[in-house]
Image (cartoon, rainbow, N blue to C red):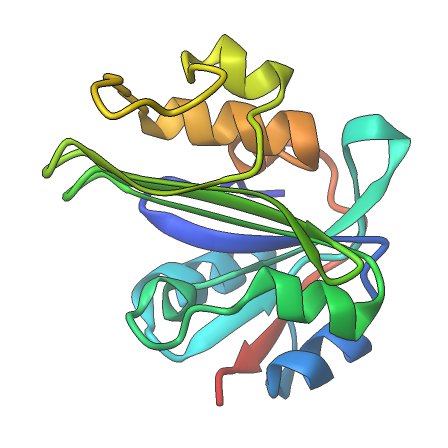
Length: 188
């Protein structure tokens, strides 16, 4: 496998069925692709996404990851709450883009938003804070509540730590045996 995650966005879908996820997102299937070619597509195009096979992850669960720059584009952001209701399960959204120090994570279960956090480092502001932080968020330095004068500092590695604790840290996939090829899709 080939890792990804830096300067990228991805969805993690617990026990995700690739066909159901692709249909819910309105993706057009382009077929199987190697990990190298698929990750290149995800990073170098604005209208392609790749889906992983189910990967082992946090809490003994299996996770389907969907990644591509399309998820970073303004106006194309997928609502994990809607998607989790549509798929009747758990959906997480992660994004990190070091140029503006944008770092984001969201977690929804069965159509209910459990947690949302977004930090824009270039402005030094928390742009989204819904729900209560959990233990892993506390371990990356988030306070239990956000007060008006609370200083928050989050980095790419913090996004990966949260992803690893909640589902899968995609940067940790490098060199692991692949359970299958990636699936390339075209965004709507």
